[in-house]
Every structure is written in C-alpha cells, then in structure tokens.
Image 1 (cartoon, rainbow, N blue to C red):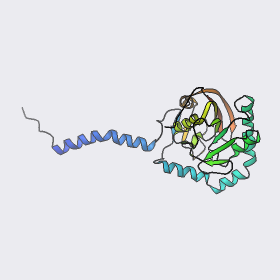
Image 2: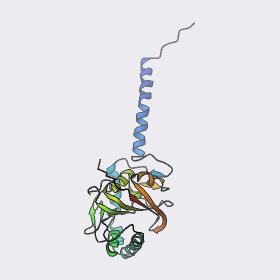
Image 3: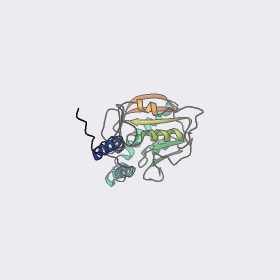
Image 4: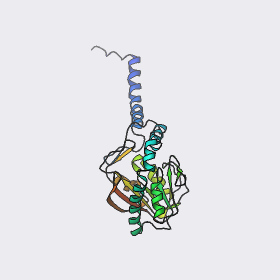
Amino acid sequence: MKATQPKPPILKYFILSLIVSLPLIYLLFSLKSNPSVPDSKDLRIRPGYTSYDIYIQKQLNKTLNPKLRQIWRTRDWDRKIQVFAGFFEELKQKGLLSNQSKALCVGARIGQEVEALKRIGVSDSVGIDLVPCPPLVVKGDFHHQPFDDQTFDFEFSNVFDHALYPDKFVGEIQRTLKPGGVSVLHVALSRRSDKYSANDLFSVKPLVKMFNLSGLVHVRKIDGFGLDTEVVFRKKQNIVIQRS
C-alpha cells in the first residue's frame, strides 16, 4: 500500500491560522456593521457607524444645520409648541404629569417641547441636546445624561430613533427618573423617513423589554411630526439605579 504523503508544514499552518481567524473576522465585521444591540425583526441598528465620533458628527450635522435651525425658530416654533402642549395636556388629564413635576425633554434641539411644558404650567422643565440652546436646553448626550440618579418625575423624548445604543438611551431615562416617574416616547413604527436616524423600530416589544424596571402604561396612535405612536411607562417603586 502506498503511504500517504504528509501535508507540507506551510499549508498546515495556513489552514490552522484561517480556522482560528474566522471567528475574529466575523466578530469585527459584526461590530462594524452593528455597534449596538443585535438586529431583530423589531429593532434594527442602521449600518455605517464605524465609530462613535462618526455617529456624533452625523447628529451634529442635523442639529447645526443653519437652514433647519432657522425653520425651527420661525415657521415651526409656534406650531410645534401648540402640538406638544396638546400632548402634554392630555397626559395631565390622565394624571401622568402635573404642574409640580420636574420634567426633562431628551433630545430637545432648540426646546419647543420645553417651552410647551412651561406654557401649560410645568415650570420646572429643561431639555438636553448635543448643542445647548439657553435657556431651555442644556448640553448633554442622551446615552450618558448629565444628571444625578432619580432627578426627574417626567421625561419625554421623540428622538429614540436617533439612539445608536437604544439600551443605554433607555437605561439613562430609568436611572434619572424617580420611582413612580413617567417616561413618554413618541416613535415611528410604520415610517422610515429620517436619514439621520440610527435605528428603526417596528414594534413596541423592544421598548417593553428595555424598560425592564418600568411598567407599560399605555400605547396609542398619534400624529406627531412623522411619529405615529406614543408609548408611556411608569418606573416601579423602590427601584434604585446607579450609573455603571
């Protein structure tokens, strides 16, 4: 019987190195295309954000766009304030917001949401955004809010789709809410219109899962500047969350 010739050492080393490298290559590719939570049918992170700096710069491109800021300050100013005030009045009627609430608007741009809260009597209100807009909006990254634990009674945001790390976005809301505090999100479940969005949400299931220290209060359809769904949570009592 003819003896089997052994494989050349170089070929054996090449095959071994290829086998060892494949998992690392797959991991690096996955992180590059999806730096946050794994994609699912209900929540998908948009590709292309190879670093956090690139993500921040894209968000700043919108926030600092002079044409958009001019529109926000003029044509859209009163119109948006009136619409937001209507949403907030309904929440007051349901006992989810009061004039005594300490309120935060997450991703407030130039502060129409904050102004709407103040006009309906919620005077202790402030917004955060990457670019400050005094006196209504202070500088802050919603992935790492610049506030102490259990600061607010009420938090509102209509920029969940701009979160590159949705779990951190939600975690910071829960951390800075007082026990019993209310968080309100306006999201889009049926439209993918904003080119600056970092994620696409297709149902409320991922939100319910991420708001693991809160109870779902209600889900309802709305017409909110391209956003079609309002989701409200209330943080459970006797819950303490510390920044990791």
